Every structure is written in structure tokens, then in C-alpha cells.
Image (cartoon, rainbow, N blue to C red; front, side):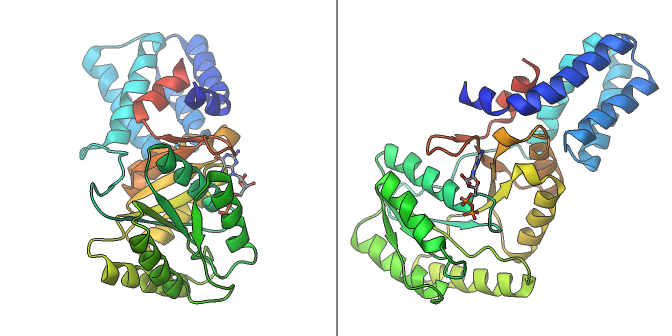
Length: 302
Ligand code: GDP
């Protein structure tokens, strides 16, 4: 239900337009496809992905000799899910170690909802009975450490921190030692989110990752990029930049509740080949959901 509510803006926008289109055209023709293309691009599905979808739909129309636009409605959903899953299939599960410490690195630019997402994830793991620790690795932005502490208190997990301006790699080292001493299951690491200088970003992330790798072979077990769905194509650019800077294992797409352009999920997955693992559907600690393409696409049309 929460998932459906969170998508209401996208659903209202997208579904009403598609329904209206289907009603207006009745018969499938070139103009119908052109208008469908515009609706999809308007929903931020992304140009490449839209072209791929339209081609697939046209093939299907030929193959099944579809003439009525009504018949095409369910095919659109099917194809959207297929495109999302891709050839390699899709898993939204996190690489959680069955024994010992799991380290999750959270990356993303300021304002996208990184701190909130860390809080929500801490709450999620906590509710599963896991012992969680947070690492205040954003030592650059004023207020970042305090903001993480507010979430730590709210959720009831400790935050490992040093002073503002300290070396993030040193914070990570400390946090890993603490996590070991306390026998924590999950360490969620915040990082600085400046993107003004790609070389700096890369160097800092690499340094942080090196410390983690040295301490725990195979870690970090996830590098999750947090993106703000309301920023549309900007989110795509951020994803490309971070993908070049480090190996991102998954995406958390926040503020999906605040946009009518939820098609960005498909563009990210299809064009960047990074799975969207979780979506943020509100500001509360329970407003984080694993992303399920089928539920999502069919939710748009129901
Ligand atoms: P950070 O700078 O990346 O750490 O961003 P914050 O975690 O401080 O979030 C920025 C703002 O976005 C805050 O006002 C959050 O409450 C809000 N926010 C974060 N995630 C979501 C979400 O999924 N939905 C909505 N509606 N707001 C969100």
C-alpha cells in the first residue's frame, strides 16, 4: 500500500495520459506511437529506453497483429518490466554477510537524502534484529555529523565520529574497530557528497574504500549511490559520474513520492545497468522499500 501511495503522483500523471491516449486513438498507428513516446519521455523514462520500448512494442504489434490500442496497454507494462530486468535479470537483495560484519558505503551528492536513507536503513536492519553502527564519514559538510547523530538517536543506534574536518579514512578505520569490538552486524558509512571536483571525489572515495578493504577483505559489501528522483536527468548525470569514480553496486532512489516522473527508475537501470535496490517514499523512518519492478510498473497502471 505504501508503495502504491508513494507512486501516486507518477501514477496520476502517467496513467491518465496513457488512458487518454488509448481512448483517443483506438487504432494503433504511427501517430499513436509518437504520442506515447512523448508521454514516456515526459515521465523521465529516458530517450534510449523509450526508443527501445517503442521498437519492442512495434515488433509485438506485428507479431500478434494487434490493431486496437486497448490491447497494447498490457503489452506496455510487460515490456517495461522486461526492459527493466534486462538480459542479466535483476536482484534488489543486498549483499549481507551471514557471519561477521557487513560494511555498506553510502555515496551521493548533498541534499539527495543520503542521511535520511542511512537512518531508514539503520531502522530496517535494527528491526531485523541486527546490531547496527553508523560511521560519520562526511566530515566536510557543516552539520553532517550532527544530522547523522539525530538519526542515530531516533533509531537507537550509535554513531562513530571524529571532529569536523577530520580525515574520513581515519573515521572509517575507527568505525571498523568499534564495530568489531561491539560485534556489530552492519556498519553504514556516510561519505562526503561534493561533486564539484571529480578528482577529489574519486580520491576521497578510493582512500576510504582502501581502508575498508584492508581491514576487511571483500568489504565494502555494497556501495549504494543515493539519487533524488525529483532531479530527473540530473540524477542520471550524477549516476554516470559516480559510476566512473567508483564501483557502485546499487542505487537508492529517494523522493519517489515527490515526483510525477518516476520513469527515471527505468532509465537508470536500463542505461547505466545499475540495479535500483531501494526507493524512498517519504521522510519517515519506515518510508524505505525494496524496489520491485513488477510491482512498480503494474502499480502504475492499476
Ligand atoms: P543529504 O544531504 O543527502 O544527507 O539529505 P537529507 O537526508 O538531509 O535529505 C534532504 C531532505 O530530503 C530532507 O528534508 C529529507 O527529509 C528529505 N527526504 C529524504 N528522503 C526523502 C524521501 O524519500 N521522500 C521525501 N518526500 N523526502 C525525502
